[in-house]
Length: 147
Image 1 (spheres, rainbow, N blue to C red):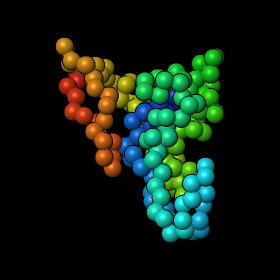
Image 2: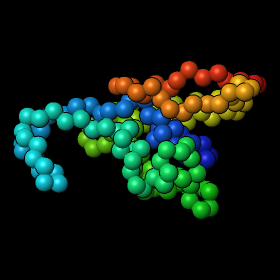
Image 3: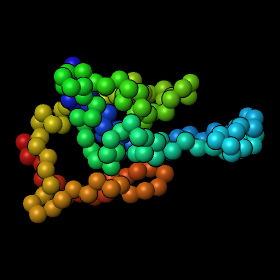
């Protein structure tokens, strides 16, 4: 079951989701949210990265911390946090490839770290701040990869 690896994949998706924004939608009717009217026909866009980086359910969201997903026993995952991690959107327009992508991510992460030790190059630190835009792209890093 490998709960720690699953927690790492969830945290990777929360912390460094490639797609910063969700697919745009158009409101079908006037909608009032917190006293603010959004007229029918308005283009709206869900900012997935903002949601997962600012949701109060994630303690210290600016830190990469897979352990946040693990229950006290370390053997099970916290369902409430899993449900708040939305890299594939949610609802009836959720990404059709979500299941396959989750399996591929799990296999890729597991295989990589089974075969390699990855660390910063000597005298370097890893910069986790992405380049912003439509896609959140990691900055070029100098890494040391060992078998």
